[in-house]
View (cartoon, rainbow, N blue to C red):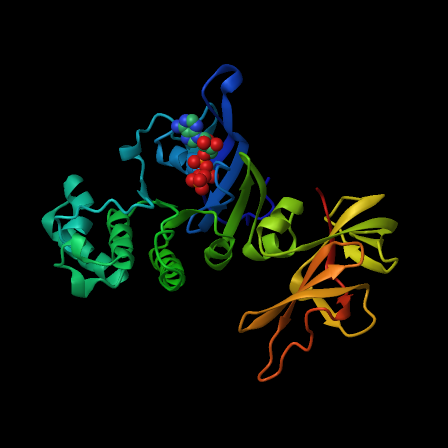
Length: 367
Ligand code: ATP
């Protein structure tokens, strides 16, 4: 059972033991390798992972464009293998919005409803509601070859939401937008999801996007799901080294375990310094381990600290400064320090400094 799933919520989609192989024999490619995820009703659920990890394949399977080699997709508890895509109460927004350029915004949004043969009055009021939801009322009569990328994105969303699908699938829908517009649309999408109460399954390779928008995230790599949890869970308690590295930034240090407690170990770093590190429940690592420290949980100090090194680079980011340190023993380490008004971080390239690792900052991770 998935521990991140609350008991009182209805399950909208369940992927159960999905295997997908493309091709046959020795050249067969296993795109999904025993993937199981449970997505709640009304949830903003994100499939996150690097290119080629199998996100789109899983999404296409939920839509019905692809069939599992093994396993089943359940919609509200029922196996939907026999349902063709157009009979599933599921809609998809693709990366290329695929709008009809010669139709107006209004006509594009109405299109799906007309195909379904809905009564005229219903279509009119539904389209009006969708125009309002995506804030495109003023451009309703504009042809879609005469609107911006961000506006086209809104229309594509409105068109997909118009028939009130139970589930909306979104495959990297924001990747064509510039940074500022993407940030805006992230907040907009989240708002639309909570206003409509429709279950969203969102695919992205952008970890920041996933953290900002999702109720829960499934982190995927090479056809497997490595971790499922809230953004906080995933960032703060990564299941292994891949997840810690993929989500946010992390420093990795080699250390050896010198004492074990419950969910805690004492480790000795290469410098001889000893620190306490947390451990995932039910695991008792021994010997040489990898310790992960987030850059914002470490502090650069002029003298002392748990490890020493030399400042290699100081990068100013407005809200914070990244101090890149080359440790004695050659490992790189990054400290992220919040900036304050009219005061530099106080360290310059070439300075010998110490790094203080705050209590609770270190975690032992599985490789
Ligand atoms: P991206 O972010 O690049 O879209 P993804 O995580 O969505 O990547 P998928 O598109 O699901 O990855 O592909 C997973 C793997 O399956 C890849 O190695 C891909 O090359 C392969 N694959 C996908 N579709 C097919 C197909 N129709 N035939 C053969 N191989 C395929």
